[in-house]
Image (spheres, rainbow, N blue to C red):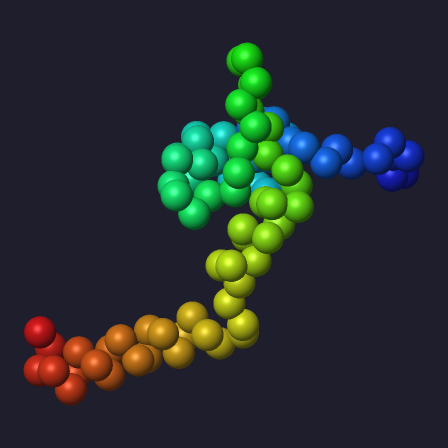
Length: 84
């Protein structure tokens, strides 16, 4: 049964890890990057807006087959260049 409690607009690191299935440690590293979602630093707490996280994650979306296309292109480029 789904809870009637609304989902929070802001996530602490533990909630962020649960929401995305990405570890707290990995998020600590990602949040240091210049292209990371904005954070709110409170005493003893870091919060990230759920909408910012969703927008950031969408940048990494790949359409079906896109990953394979990148691999094939890379292999073909190496073959054409003599495997350098």
